[in-house]
Amino acid sequence: MDIPRIFNITESAHRIHNPFTPEKFATLGNALRLKPGDRVLDLGSGSGEMLCTWARDHGIIGTGIDMSSLFTEQAKQRAKELGVAHQVKFIHNDAAGYVSDENVDVAACVGATWIGGGVAGTLELLAKSLRTGGIILLGEPYWRQVPPTEDIAKQCLANSMSDFFSLPGLLASFGNLGYDVIEMVLANQDGWDRYEAAKWLTMRRWLEDNPDDELAEEIRSKLATEPERHATYTREYLGWGVFALMPQLKLQKT
Ligand code: SAH
Image 1: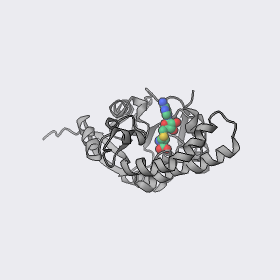
Image 2 (image 1 turned 60 degrees about the vertical axis):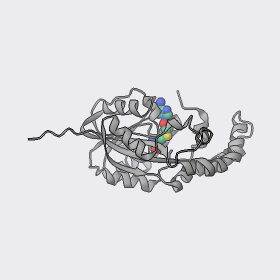
Image 3 (image 1 turned 180 degrees about the horizontal axis):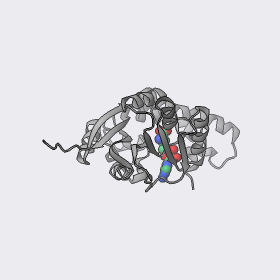
Image 4 (image 1 turned 135 degrees about the vertical axis):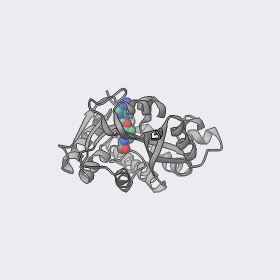
């Protein structure tokens, strides 16, 4: 079981598999006011950067599940490197339907909401692992500018314009699903470059080493077209952020 090989190739050198930078994860960790011993569950944990750095900086206890064996292995290595291997556990598995044995303080899915079949399904899944008063984190794209045509949406690698909301639309949708938005940290265009442009050097080096691979033609063509596509479309039209949510509070007047 694994994710499509193309991602394991193009993102093999990424520590963070989304438009967040290390600084953004640090900002988010501080914004959440994490405490030592807080339990954090991360579905689609990638190479483990969020859990490992929060374990180092805030003393959290974390579990990450990811379907890429390469990324999971890198996450375990990173935990050792940062001296937090006793605090974080990384499991190579499909996270669909995963519910933790013990309820957690923070339940996250940062850039992988297809795991629960979309935002609503992922919120429902994460809520099953959450303690009362805990926080859900969702990393999700939104339209920074709503694309004027469906073709432009497709060039941003969306299936259609309706895949994503505008930022106000996304925030409103959380309310409609019964959640209060209690924090957010947004990526920016430099962050998109870190995520997208870092793939180009990886692809270039991989091509030098693997000219006869069955994916060589596909990667050759991506390397030729991705910089321009990214600069024209994703970088301009797509935003991305991590949203912190809690089930809506019903006021009980005393
Ligand atoms: N949250 C990480 C990774 C985001 S990229 C970070 O911020 O860096 C999306 C991740 O979801 C990839 O690591 C991919 O391997 C993982 N993934 C995709 N489908 C999955 C599934 N069904 N179950 C678990 N992980 C999955």
